[in-house]
Amino acid sequence: MSIDLIIYLLGGLTIGSALMVIISKHPVRSVLYLILTFFLISANYIMLNAQFVAIVNIIVYAGAIMVLFLFVLMLLNLSKENEPKTSLLVKVSALISGSLLLLVLLAVFKDASFLSIENEVSNPNHGLVQNLGKLLFTKYVLPFEVSSILFIAAMVGAVLLAKRDKNIIE
Image (cartoon, rainbow, N blue to C red; front, side):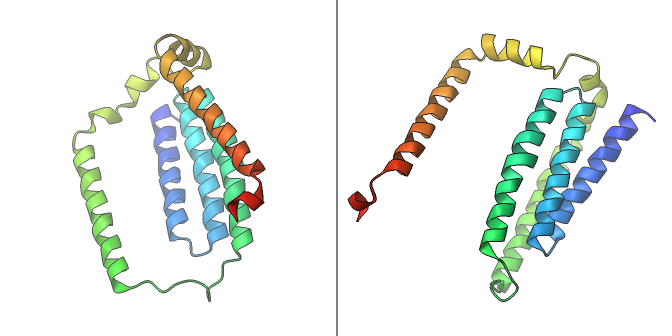
């Protein structure tokens, strides 16, 4: 089985599971299909020799974010009675926006030179952690440090909001 066939098969399965996220009526099933989509995307990353991105995708998205989604869904206790009715305007606007998205995708795929897999597979060290680290700490060291300062400021703000005295608000 060639690499091209495996990548196209994984891509088709990924698109199919992503469509099931949208089509599924039950929210928990939709989240489970989303987890499957994240695992299939990680498999695509592994096929493109980007192991670090694949593992981070599994840990962050399939692990932490999906557990949060499932927790919120279970906490909300969604049912058919609580579901709002969609109006005709919402359905028409969804149809128009979907058609525009399809038009944009057709315009992008018209120039399909970026779909060549040989360009990605030709460099065997393309997605390795060592190359990512070299690039991050040489060429992109300033944006990396600025983002770390931003994350520290967000953590300090979250701690301050959590420890705020409740009597001050009232």
